[in-house]
Length: 344
Image (tube, rainbow, N blue to C red; front, side, top):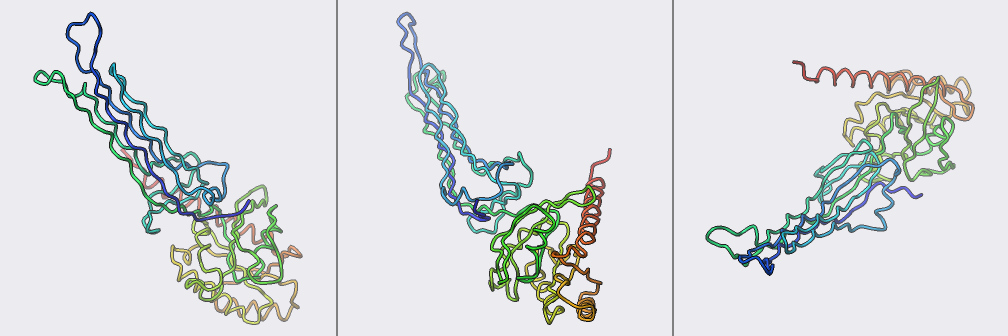
């Protein structure tokens, strides 16, 4: 299945049904009267978060969704039926934006969430509604109200516990393949990873979700390379694993480039907890390792892990550190919720 994380969709709620003009005409009832029913309400446009999806690919082939018109009123005081809703099913982590692609309308993070984007029009009143002591035979009824039309943007941000960041060919996809059952494309050229990937990682009886995004280069926030569009997929992560290619001549510069792009992107990415690691260390001798570690530690202000996905060196240590930070972040979030809870 192809991965699609953004789609533009046209939605329209249903019009209300028209009211009815009708009069009773039973043979043995001397005085009849108006009995026209009201029209039914038009269908709503609803966005629903479901468990069976992980991409927005369905919205590449259908971009228009219209709810049905409410049923029209009928004689004998019969009201029209409510129009069926138009339901847009999306994966967890989907955000809904207005046509300007900036105004957030909804953020669906849990399966089962439902948000009404556009409500259907009210049904019109039948002539029975207008009868009174001074108007006993009204011959008027209201048409139904029109529904709402709008263009919206659907934007998917993957929900993961940890995210991988780094330059192209830093070893992110190789690491994901080594620690999970995910099978990302791996090759010896830049931008092999074109779409974000997810993998479930297990360590010491614990498991968490790890997200891999395409590599960043200098100027990504201005659109260079694949740009920074995919950084949205690590916005929800609790911790970042920053991989720096140990075979690079300038590991300090590689680290600085990624940090600069995280700062430029915003969304508090640069403030997230970070685990720093030198990848591909199996290709270096001990002396070169020490030089690269010292250079990276000086610019980063922390001692990097030594990591090799091929030989599994340092892999378990990195995973345990990620799990520890994830647990700490979850505990902090739980504490904040407890403090915010109302106390009598």
